[in-house]
Figure 1 (spheres, each protein chain N blue to C red):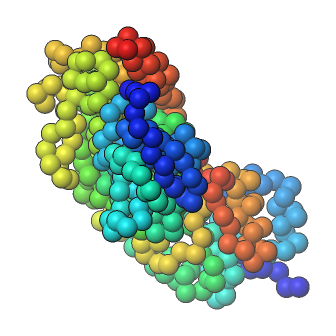
Figure 2: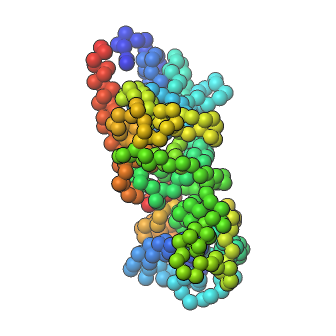
Length: 177
Length: 241
């Protein structure tokens, strides 16, 4: 049996979901028999591959770069999983949505900076007006809420997908935990 | 208060034959018979409000859906509490509530102790399909011990009712209409300057979300204590008997 091609991506999030993924500990070794991790902040390849079976997305869509990435990923992924509250709800990154982008940048780079007060505009992605949950930009197949979802929750979701089933998240995870 | 002399009605809830006093609501009878109907604005010991619409049920022969918390039993009534249609509507109601305010559980004082959060999990609402509004609502931290974050308020009016009906102070009220509606203390004065507030904290403890909380609580620390409510109600019923 050929291995399932898995990818993980990190958009606007704190990497906590990836830490939780790593918290699967020795179960990662068992999963490695069935899965090939083809793209991830945890592995080396820099280009998202052409055909991926399952992609776990951590983080909300906050910048034009996030937007391009997630559209490209959706095109090349069979099953797209929103992993964690930032992907599912836009969570903490979306707390800037009550303010204008200019206000947020001023606050961070001018008001609160003691030296070199300037808003970065070279070689950094442009922020979108609003931080968005992944499913508001591209269709999402599976939602795994949690901040972060526990290692058990992630393990359950992945093993269910490997069995060809849609994970039932009731009693396993909720917003915020 | 249930009068022993009240007349008995018989009805069906989810196909189950049940008996009830005529002054009971569908919600009360369902609970007595172990049938779960989700609620959010309702709280045992307070008058029913009928605002959140999560307890909507189907009644045979009636075209519209009825809120179980304010619908009284009738002879021969056939009630359905959990059809696919009701499940969808309830999830949609939760989505609308989540999208209307700023309900970010991960950084909320009530994380893990929130009726809205646990109901979302229980009813299988795993994502919000409508756009979030991200309003910019005011916070009132002028009270010495408590604070109000209107961003997390779902306008259930539990605080208004407990303050009026149990504490007898009527400090809280709802001001404005529709999307502008918000809770206020006294005549829209800062909470800390309220002349009627007794600082009893009942509003904080009945609040289903992290909208009302004790100062000094960090994320997930605001567990609500509601044991006083059925106790006080019971003592008062005994006294008036």
